[in-house]
Image (cartoon, rainbow, N blue to C red; front, side):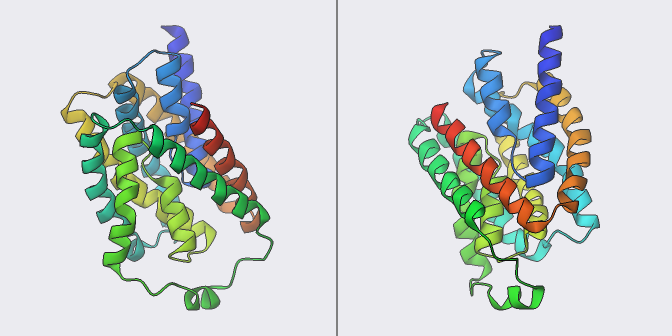
Length: 252
């Protein structure tokens, strides 16, 4: 039992670091650990991971929101799409093998990691950034983020990485605002999926509480580090983490 507590604490630190610096979900760390080490059912691991994401993201989003790094107006359409998709995904999770989706998702993340690593230009100023925004409306953003919600329900990935990609490439937000907005959207996406898994009884409450509490502290610390990083440095970190996450998902 003591070993499990140590495992949960280490997982909490890892989850907080992933969310605090990158605004991404800790599913890559939590789900494999619960399945491989604890021999939990995949559905239990996924549901638990989503609840942890909710707990962790609240503190991290608060830090970014206080610093004006959350674009609520652009984040709301993403949330609506994620809620719709996550509820569908929870139901499909018990019917469709997620292997094909995992591989496609992993390859996309690896591609984004390579893009982040080779990016050399400085980020555009706010005025220039706004001119480069794609001319898409809220309804189109909802449609784009429904697949992100599907990934939430099926894989337990609350969409932090995908929201981040959408925020950077489609909404053209600067990197720090993109991280804050992605984290904000991730909270609601994860909460929607959590409710779905809780209804069918597939959440390990004790693990979620321990990992969640530790990840709050870890996320608070690492979010401050993330805010102080140079934007290009953050892009390099994003690239490495994206590639690692993609490879891990393919292997597991």
